Length: 598
Image (cartoon, rainbow, N blue to C red):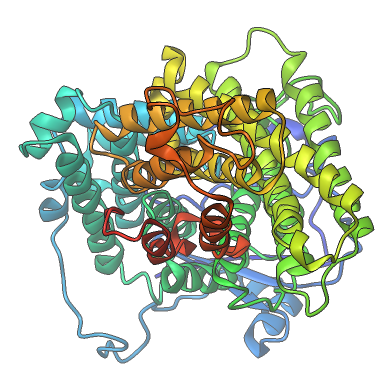
């Protein structure tokens, strides 16, 4: 097979005009084939100059696969010193054709194509993905994928296996956004309930994606489509609360093998290819940040990288002849990913400086982190709220980002309330944190209600019944904790009670769909908390649970309230990072029954 090397050398060929920048073009089957001249520069995002020393070469094979060879490699050094060595014939599988690392097997492309849904359903699922999910983890260039998809429809058997894997991953993720009454779920799943059909189709298309990757021998030969498929696959698994740590490690190693940690401008690629690589690397690092935060920094070793963040641009701005401006007023297709990355880094700092530190943080440290969260919220206001005629997904993104920022405030301040008895912080500090917790909890519950009730957000109910409900549960527990543990006036206690009661009502509505294990588990907890909140110590005659007889059905003495408070306070702040980190057995102890559904 013929291979082509793209080198980051100081020895540059003659400059070519900007008009040679490609328009969105097909990447099938050899997605790495388009290379523009070294003068492929633009207004933003090209900090590397021709004086950058050689970092290595990307070797592109006729099969469409790629490999990065760093300049420390003996062969890549020779290639850089001798530019005439760009056309070397080689065999990507190796000379012996042996069984490493697995026994060789051959899967016919027709077998894999048979796993696709009918064309009309495939089109609908693809459209759902690009309308709902693509802007959430925007690692693809949408026009390029659309071009590839049309070519695929015209001649399916010529598709590359890695691209087909990417398509199957897209289908598996799109299924998650289908409403419970979707005919697509019933027609493709043939099961009795929406949850069963969703789970079946998720697993079916993920399995098909892995079959495609396996048939392509992805563990030792790969390209950008391989990495895109893996990153999106891990993203989808995370949102269904599955385990993906081992797969994430594989994806990172493949990214390194492709040279995605090196900023692609040094490889003289066209700007679409540059941004696709940057987006993949950014998405992968965000997934790593999430995993490290929720699982306790299993791998905190930084990977040396010269890659800069993706540009904050829309896909149509990456085509030839369009100037990219350094500043803009409103959000783009990339804004959510970049802003979410900032949020996760803030979350990681909160975890390391408050949960993971051997010494408790000072209140000044708490205030500094709180100021950073407030500054982030101001950025959201400036970027999203002053823009008109934006796609609906921007409104959904704004709610999700604000919700997560309020979740960070709860992670930051609620431990202050829990440590109140130890006298670690002044009463003024505790009251300040209490105010922050009440404000953010109410805001979180308001966002949860909006995403549940507003019909324009129907495509995002999958989020609201998952992570959105988990954050709302945290907010409700925080309000209950404050109501039980502090001496509040009647109006304040009634307000918190009503907030938690409203949350319970929404959880009960969501749980009816059968698609929210989080709501199903949280309902008995919220009911018991409301029963406790209904008679705050010292206010028995003033405030009773609606429907009870003079408070008799919900009466607890002060000692019982303290015992109950201690019980659900035992749920540590680390458990609120993710549904995966929550130990529901702690809530079993609080309930004293087997009321929490596993």
